[in-house]
Structures are given as C-alpha cells and as structure tokens.
Length: 150
Image 1: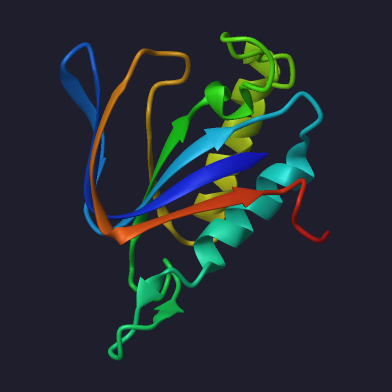
Image 2: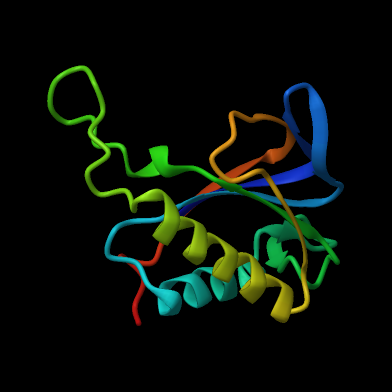
C-alpha cells in the first residue's frame, strides 16, 4: 500500500458539491492499494501514519505524532498512486488493485487507524471527489509498505 500524507490545519472532501467529510488539524492520507496488498499491509500503513512524527514540538522540530497532537485523518482512496508513467503518455494502472479487493483493504486500513485511537473521516470510495486542504508547512510525505521493513 502507498500513501501520500499531507500535514494539514484543515481539510474537506466534496462529492457533487456537498461536503461529505472534514477535519481540522491532522493528516490527509491519499491511499493507493496494489494488487499484491493484504490485511497486513493495511495494518502496517495505519500504524506508520498514526505513529509518524510529522508535527512540530514547542521547538519547531517534527517530533510529535498524530496521536500526540490529537489530530485526525482524512483518508481518500486513490488508485492513481499506482499509475505507472514510465512508458508513453497515458499512465498504466496494472499494479492497482481492482475495485472490490481495494475497497475491502481501504476499509481495513480505516478500521485499523480507528483501532489505534485516531479519528478518521473518509472520502467516498470510487466517487469523483474534490479535496480541499491547507497544507501546513508545507509537509508532504510518501509512505510505501513495499519499501518499509517488515
């Protein structure tokens, strides 16, 4: 699994012009799921995001985790994170998981974040969404379970 994380002061997602979810301080997690991902990857990604020290302490150092700042996660499913742009001009999405297995693992990821004690809001799976956010810092990080030690 792969996630692009953006530290935010606020964020919201709209579907058909209607706000369907929003958070204040926290993280927007754009979450991509590969064909080879499983429940263990979903749990690993959740643990990494909740524990990642990406918020500033009183000295301006990134030493605090999402839990330590009582932040929330806005999780947005995004199969395009597995788009391969190396050949031609149209991305290939062969590595992205098909819709139903991806939905199951996305929901597993969201449940794992909740079990770890963090508030999670979500986008609408497979919907065309408009995501608005204020990136704080800016801080943007990539987390990939395929590259993380197991």
